[in-house]
Amino acid sequence: MDKIKIAIVGMGNCASSLIQGIHYYKNKDEKDAIGLMHWKIGDYEPSDIEVVAAFDVDKRKVGKTIDEAIFAKPNCTTIFQENIPKSSVKVSMGNVLDGVAPHMEDFEDEYTFIVSAEESSDIVEVLKDSGAEILLNYLPVGSEKAARFYAQCALDAGVAFINCMPVFIVSDNEWEAKFREKGIPAVGDDIKAQIGATITHRTLANLFEERGVKLDHTYQINTGGNTDFINMLSRERLDSKKESKTEAVQSVLADRMDPHDIHIGPSDYVPWQKDNKLCFLRMEGKTFGDVPMNIELRLSVEDSPNSAGCVIDAIRCCKLAIGRGIGGKLTSISSYTMKHPPEQFTDDEAYKKVNDFIDGTLER
Image (tube, one colour):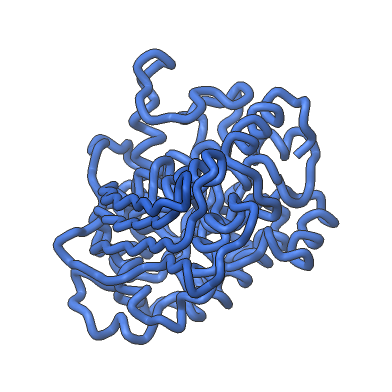
């Protein structure tokens, strides 16, 4: 069977976890494959994915082969698959645009980006020459111009697009129409974790709703020690991220909460946490007889492997769409794996729709 050929923008922790996972599951079968939502999607197992092109702007990664780049600084995620075969694919210099926040220069080299002096590659040419079918966007939060630049590159190269960060492309009608007109599938926006802050918050909010408990106030505050949390110290880069995470919770409530009663967003950067993310969640409500209750939860997860567990399904569903000649938004897998999809469904509905899409009984 042919491999699913992907290109990756941003060789950070998330890319590292994904590539480690592709090789980790290579010698496993369905019975001992822990940590997957779907072992097979169509005929594709996790190891059927191949990275054929990669882009970054950090001088410690540009020009390196992908097996070297995924372990280069400032990456700090857990290494669960040390044995990565030597790759012939080298990381190409990307286009910086607004992908690196100015304040990141204030941090030590070990923790931040060091921009390469190389000129940007011809992204479209690299995509075409590599034979990539899907472009995976792992740019930092707040990279509005850069995200749209790479989305346009995907359109120009005729490759599918999976947008894992909170710039609204697939959920934007004008951008989605461009992919639909070209017959190119797109999945987005802003990747969820398998079991992370957003999916947990959504599940509890839905539980309140189904059990007749009125949710009065809630917050979700997160801390972490990776480059994403340094990047998000710049509050002006957070508008779309905050909207994406908040809408993911609001969408499961019959009556939307007043904005003053719901606060969801990153809180602070704690260097020694590295890629570990801590979520502090509180929900206050009223039960039978208008009697108050509250839930406080502390969630600790390794951020990037948590993301890769969803991306590995999004890639394979995107490949099915390519084979079926479907262009534009893939609403089922987007609602299942993304915080800000084109259409929001409850998680139970999204799970069913994804399985129907995989079976071929649902178009998109």
